[in-house]
Length: 146
Picture 1 (cartoon, rainbow, N blue to C red):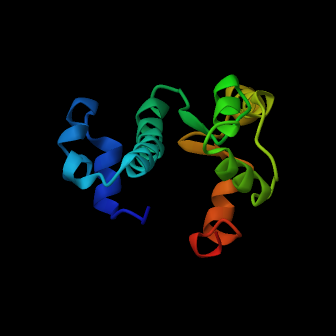
Picture 2 (cartoon, helix red, strand yellow):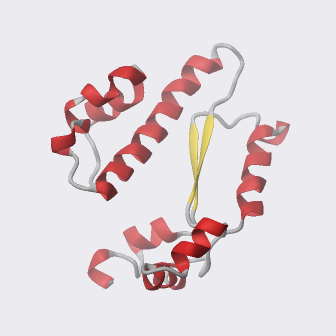
Picture 3 (spheres, rainbow, N blue to C red):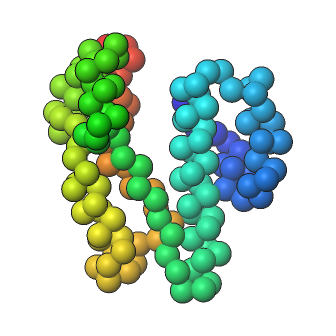
């Protein structure tokens, strides 16, 4: 998904929850497909975490998000062994980590964020995907390389 304008990012970050679906960029006719809907939801999540970190920081709280990629769970195993299994296996092979993640790896980031060691971290969205997104933009998973 291409970058949004700074105005669109601000709207995603600050529009009251009950009014989000009234935004022009989120109206059903402007959402191309389920992938686009997912991408918009992820973009909104990251932007809202930043905006909420400002509000909650005034109260002494920190706000962060964790965005895991494929983590081995029963559902993920169904996906990997299902009709889209070749897609996932290719993604793992062409990502820097070369594999899916495990729950403990996500828990380690959560532990950092919740501990005093993460006391200076707020307003961040942590992507834990073994570098699959990086490979999509700059490596062998780029659309022209698939």
